[in-house]
Amino acid sequence: MDKALLEATAAALVAPGKGILAADESNGTMTKRLEGVGLESSAEARRAYRANLFLTAGCESAVSGVILYDETIRQNMDDGTSIPDYLNSRGIFPGIKVDTGTQEMADFPGEVVTKGIDAEPENGWDDLRTRCKEYFEMGARFSKWRAVIKIDTVSEPSKPSSACLTNNANALANYALICQEQGLVPIIEPEVLMDGAHDANKCAEVTSEILRLTFEECRKLGVHNPGALLKPNMIISGKDSNEQSSREHVAHSTVECLTESVPHDVGGVVFLSGGQSDEEATDHLNRMNSMDVEHPWQLSYSYGRALQAAALKAWAAEGAEASQAAFAHRAKMNSLARSGDWDISLE
Ligand code: 13P
Image: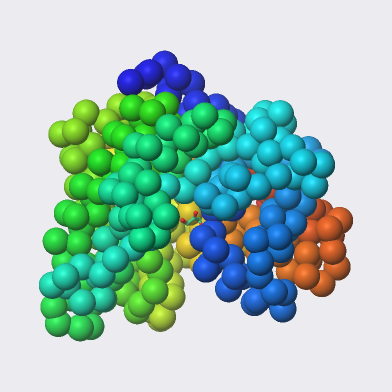
């Protein structure tokens, strides 16, 4: 394992003022997003929308890396340059989503474990180690794997089960180790979903548990923490809860939960937006970065929807330039939130 390379990549991905653009929606998810704004989805439609985003002037000052999907890393910009080569030429690291989705757990209806370590010939996927080698050669320097944890306090038995947490923690650690062997900085993403009516305390309890289990598995396998990034959810009540925390409370409880549950030598923290509004995701990050509380990591973003929702709407309604302008604005707002310098008046 090239620890120096991994640490340098991880540090560059969370450099001050910068964060990650998650543009790695699977073809199914991207189809939903395009159809949601009235556009048809095809390989070319997905390429054209994303290539336009990447062309945004000056975005490299707010974007250190872009997570791509397997289809996109093999596509070209309009001028024929490969997308990973183009991003690298702008000083932006190409990254790659390497999980292959989720599967239902046999004895735990409604719970899923993320897959992608073993080959899936029926779906055209090689095993993870083989794919990582190829992605590295294509220019990728980091990767992402998302575990999906659902809270359900109403059904019996309640969710998540400890089997779900253990299986996902183990898969995340296995993934991280294989990527590190191949020179890719793993983004470890155990997402506790906002779906449901649970309160913020329940979110904190489950988040803390999956984080502890994940890093315990990482320790057992020998994952190099400084060469890995964590992509967590924030501590937020379920969407359907009638007890929504204040933004200040979200910021404080998120930093508190992470500080207690995550090893302090991890290379950095890059939050997911997970269905928060654009402005909420920015405000929460801004508050965490302006708090009077010490935390051991750079706190940054790896937003998908919160960086792209406005750009995608503008792409459908007004075209290329408006889409870039919307993306540039959100990127700038989140870049300011890295240092606590965002303010609502800038929106
Ligand atoms: P959201 O910011 O839309 O949650 O997406 C981030 C991501 O990459 C989820 O895996």
